[in-house]
Image 1 (cartoon, helix red, strand yellow):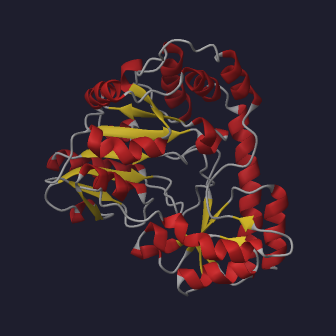
Image 2 (cartoon, one colour):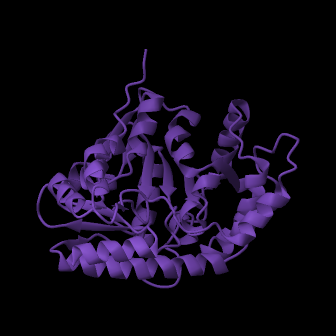
Length: 362
């Protein structure tokens, strides 16, 4: 039987995209979070040095990569009790989001909970496994049969950041019902409330001293402009990581050796992350002011790679109005019914294109 999958949401943007491209000064595409800035030199050098990759790479990751992940968690996320057995590289984070239910052996009898505003792939992962997907933000609203709970902090699309007390409550409730908690944290370094990253589900104040039943998912696509490298990893409960490693060995889900070397180099260099943060912060400030001046109200949290904007109309009306100005954005309905009155505006455009958007909004 064919898989029962929804249409790919971004295909629905074809008509607004055509309109935006007709603008005399060209399109400003703010519809996707695909980085436009250069990959850091330190990463490219490491990739080039590792191109003599004649043998099969290790599914578990090279010792250097695993040690770099452990050191990064300790340095940047305050998680100091991980070892190399608690981490595992993946082929980008979307791959693990889509395949995690299947790799965990979930199926028709199981419920997978996702946020009410959510990246569509959480539901797609449930569909691939034949499980049922339910949207719920409050642990008290989880239905019977919940076996996997997806969190996203900072959240795509609205930048909401989950607090340590809330994360601890989710973990406690999940252990009561026998569910696994997987937290997608790929925007953690883009928390605009301060200079540090947002809290992790692996924070000792969240875990209660044990990472049992918990996974953190992280990607370098955003912090290091490595979307084209498919560079990501998971970390958490040792038994869970071991289960994923075994399944991935059988399936041949292995990040290429040069990418593993590049990932280790990126994780060891904080300077390029700080520089990228400054770029995104400046773009965010300019776009936020321009959107407010054009009658949009910004909602959501102060983190992530997007602005979550509304002017109290159907999201497609906002998409059309902005397309008439040559600006393409994503309708909030892509992220669930709760987003039907909003649009998501990405910060991933060059400074020249951001300035063009600001002029058009003025």
